[in-house]
Image 1 (cartoon, one colour):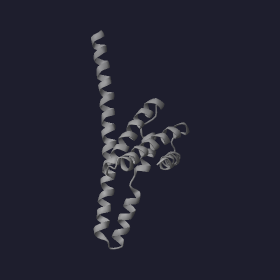
Image 2 (image 1 turned 90 degrees about the vertical axis):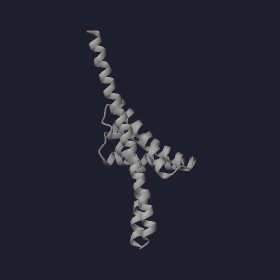
Image 3 (image 1 turned 30 degrees about the horizontal axis):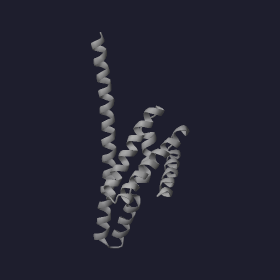
Image 4 (image 1 turned 60 degrees about the vertical axis):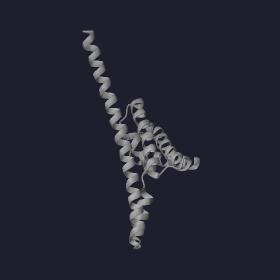
Length: 153
């Protein structure tokens, strides 16, 4: 499990470099990817949950940490989140699904394809949830500050 997390860290840093992330943000984005993948592996192998729920929980952890690092390092969230999602992307299941379909095993190929699409949708839902909550938090903080200023006047 630890080796998988270390390789997720390395892959995240490599993709951060590939996407021209600032040099100072490569290590934090690697931590984001490693934590997200670690949560995914823990839910999948440690607790025995489905791949879809594991992907969702990994994405929630990853997106939350991305939002935190974005504020801490004063960078856009995508600097940390986009490379961090790379270890979670269901690339191998999609490849296997296409391979099975090409080998005329349509039933198994379609089942693998649907599972991969559900994993991708879980990732998208996790991103949407955390991004939405961060936006609500930021907006409510601004509104509260404005009301305090009005009350002080």
